[in-house]
Length: 218
Image 1: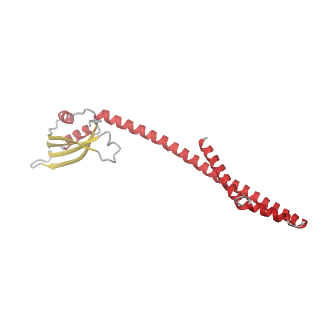
Image 2: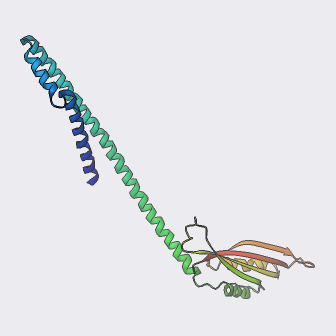
Image 3: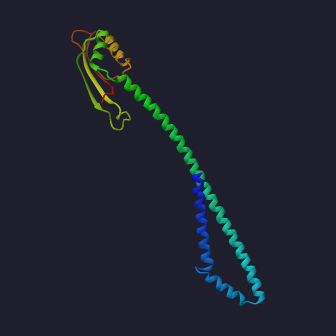
């Protein structure tokens, strides 16, 4: 109702302003034009007065038509503005609802990542999987760094990188180890993998891997 009231006030204000301007132009600031017309009218002959009255009635009728035309034009313009405002309001409400839903989905995602990564000791985690898969790892190290500022997760999470070497390992065992890392549901992904052949054998290789993930401990 506040929007309708605002437009009604605007309509009244515009009509009053236009009426005052028309009155000033027709009768003068202090009605001096009206006084002059009355004096001139009484100086006319009866026939001239009749013609003057007929002309005045025609002018008044024309002015009434113009005023009503202006009124309906303003009403139509304000109705269009009101319709556009309501359409924009409905669109804003729809976008707000979409934003709130997306924000809830985002919060659920962040909460899930935080639960999965909170208090995860990376070195024992990788050593445990390596022991289960019969893989020897060397030079296991991890580092943490802030996420880029334009990343929506930057305020809640940070990036973690893990590097390790796996010497004298077969391709099937290497793949099995990396698959178990990614299947652990800790949001860890292999970012870089290097495999080098070993001299004197075609079954075993020296491998170096970099794993990227998230950490909620800030």
